[in-house]
Amino acid sequence: MYQVLARKWRPADFDELVGQKHVSKTLMNAIESGRLAHAYVFAGLRGTGKTTVARILAKCLNCVNGPTTSPCSECDACTEIAASRSMDVMEIDAASRTKVEQTRELLEVVSYAPVRDRYKILIIDEAHMLSKASFNALLKTLEEPPPNVLFILATTEIGKLLPTILSRCQVFEFRRVGTRELTEHLRRVCTAESIDVSDSGLERIARAGEGSVRDSLSVLERVLAFCGQNVQDEDLLRLLGGVRAEVLIQWLRGLATRDAGMMLQVLDGVIDEGHDLLPFWNELVACLRDLLLIRAVPEGDDLVSRSSEEAAALREAAEGLGVEDLTRAFQMLADLEYALRSSSRPRFVFEAALIRLAGLGSVKPIEDVLQSLAGGRAASRPTVSAAPTPRARRAPAADPKPQPQKKNPAATADPAARLIEAVHDKQPMIGAILEQANAILLDGQALVVSFGKEDAVVAERLRDAETVDLLRQAAERISGAQVNIRIESDGGPEATAEQPAPPKPAAPDTVAPETAASKPKTRARARPGRDELLEQARSEPGVKKLLREFGAQVVDIRPLEVATPEPAADVEDQE
Picture (cartoon, rainbow, N blue to C red):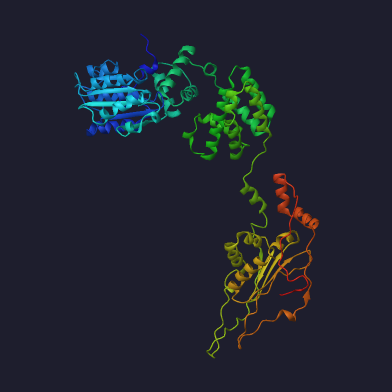
């Protein structure tokens, strides 16, 4: 009598188990060391080997050569367990025995010693189907079972088991089997069964199995019923309802070029071939997912559920798409699932989504845009002119002997670079503005920062009272003397941003600095009007590039508050 592949290729021992090495190794070590628990919970996806492992464990414990990690599969105990007719190994379907009375009957049977084998083993499949009363009836027996009794609860929904049940059992999580591991297992089966199928076809069958070994073998069984021993890729696609790689490549090219017509033609062709929209949507989402993984982890081939040739073709088709573009497309398609399932016109919904995808512009990281804006001036340091360091003033002291002169730190290091670094630590934005200056002059008593005509608006930012105070403090720490500050911009009247610090009391032997009263006075520069400020902003190269990159426009501009003296007073020009 013919036996289906899922039953014929069921593992007979732990070495044949597919994709659950953590379970097999733990149980084998427990058998060898004699550390067997009295109750286990096997939880995981359907078809990953929960009931199979329960039978293998039963054979290991009751084999004539046992307890052993390699049962003979030939003795009476092994053959009866494999055929589900052993008197000491009972398999119960919890879905058909949910009542508490039936559970009590089982517990009464379990209380008797094994008929022939070493252990009496109770395997409860789909244990989550038991009623709450049945679980409560199991509690005491699970905690203190009779000698030589072992409980194994298999379930696909561990969340439905009571915490009191789980606390009395050792829990094993059966993992979803990877596509590559499933493909290798299917290749071994096809080789043994003399089935001719391509590697790409086996990968498609493994993906259709969705991590389940039994489901993958069932899909292979259906393919063999349709194609026979010689499986062609075209027949496989026709049977499984999949989409050819060429279709996905054409769709990606339409997405990369923002060609709505090409993407709609691909959709129309898929519908004409008789494919359902939901499987096609699933293929597109999986395709974008693989591309995102390829971009994020170029060396992570194991993460991608495709052959290397197909992945390379998809990568080439999506060459013009960045990670941000792929992320947006993936998110839009992922949000489409509910509409496709619930809409009476899923094609219309799909077409509208593709048109929206085509209408989205390409995305650039803001860091790249800012870096390109800083391209010229921010990358290069401003030119520095260092004046000779004047003789330091002597500090007042009680000792009549002359004090030694202090060395100016600016004489042994780049004063402008030190100034920019000091300001950048306090105010990164002000430090970035200083980096755009054409020249910075710092001698013992003066700091002059010069900007070009196109940077007049930027220079205005440094004339703020708090900014001037920050510059003065940093400059005086570097030069070791009182510093006057001047901000210059070409193409306009020179403006002094300095607000002199309160005069320090001079000692008898201290040379007093030249007072500002001896200098000629200049009137405060008139504040530019709104139209003039708008024109200056629009002509600034960085703003122009931002407007061009983002399609924006300047709608309003507010002048920075420049610190000035009283309205009727004159601003003293200090140099």
